Image (cartoon, rainbow, N blue to C red; front, top):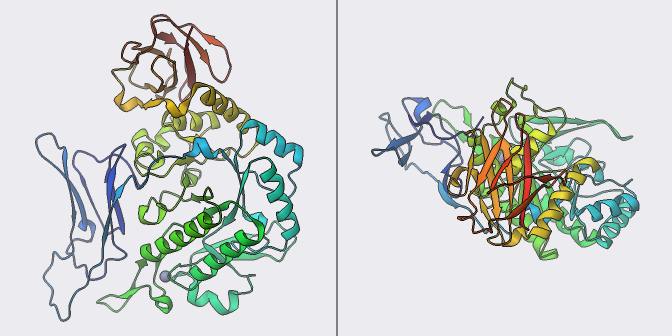
Length: 489
Ligand SMILES: [Zn+2]
């Protein structure tokens, strides 16, 4: 796991191209494309983070460039950057985008009608929209045009998959793969499910001319078909690359080639895609899927991100939440501290049950992207309730800083509240512990500025929940949550 809370004893580690330090609302990132001209006696102490002060609330980030004597024969050049987060205001967010991952040429109008009625506003169409993996053109033009029209008639935006790869069956493969792929070669995704020739796709580097190819391709695609944006697989990830043919890599003192993480070129790729999408559609989307790679210089150009695939291969532990601790969630998966709205990725094959992923996500104001109708139906209830309640006008009071507003019977029972003074609140109460709990929450109606008498109900089951003097009791098994809507009587 990349991103836990900072321990008391701080952190020491090897060179990394990107470091971010922050809390639930803000942070500061440092980045450098490579460790060229670094010279350290201890390779495992290039990056040091130290807590200082009486209570350890001052944090020092130290990047050790040179800690062992060396002879300097030529000027040493270093390039690094800083970026503060959040990078932009949090609106619109994933509650506005209402994304599903269900795009298909075989989707019929009655299913689209159902999705629209459920509140879906965005549909991602995965790699199948074109036969060549991660390509910007398709032989299914008429079908694509028809799908765009059908989506637009229902106010659904259509985003098409674009990726970080070049396929062996792309017409450009022969001429371009040597100069455009990352070195050493990575990826090797095999796509075999279509009645098309088998293909293997390898990871490209955007410091190469492939950046122009992708930018030009997306521009043409938006011109030609009027799609509403892109779903980007891994595109914001600055892969380590030693391909000297396009300017990556550097010569180490021992003669070997070190890797460059092409943060600036990838940022340029993302900036160009964002500009192309927004030039065609001021409300267009650049939705990024990445796996534990919060490189904000590149990710800043995403309108939202979808993170969590890296968890899917982990084994479930006796207590499922150990796979995704709350401090990790708040660091990487919440979006608020980055300025990019977040969704959590969940697959049936992963270590969580869907309700567990939804509980933990919702506790952090994050949605789990639906990929089937049953999940859409669950979200539909949440969206409709939030619309009626007025989430836009509510203040979010998250569990880690709301003890003046709510108390629970045990520390593992946590509640985050959307509050509209005088008009009720919606609370997500989650048992984050490993044991079942007779979860109880006592809301302080005075500090919430709510009337003394409120009627509460379970948003998903629509059943009433008895509330007396702001106190409710709802037995919750481990990682189960309940979303409660309390309204003035
Ligand atoms: Zn490269």
